Length: 122
Image (cartoon, rainbow, N blue to C red; front, top):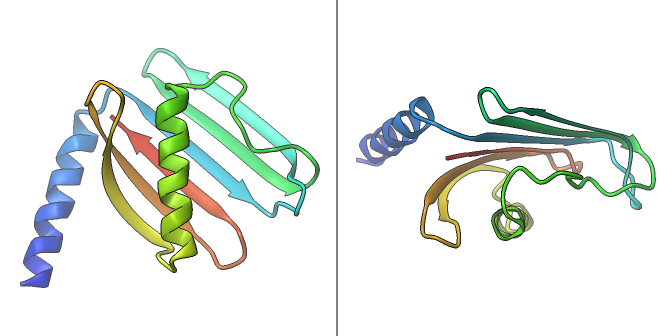
């Protein structure tokens, strides 16, 4: 039964991704207690995809200079992922809603060493 439910959830997520209008990827790796050394941000407006990559021990926060979505979405998503990771759920998926009620999907993958990758898809 659990496998059937998981398969249905995966199919639902796959359908949402297939018709995505916006994709946001964030990659954090090898940061230090004060932040990151190398921060790279890219935006492809043709297909509405956005990426933020933060790597190496440094002093800068891993934050968007030009946020691809509202601050509400970015903050709520990060808080939800942090709560999950702090609770021991290092990988997972979920559905959230922006201020207008529009649903978006979140998928994350974290390591026990502080590395984190997550994708937001509308």
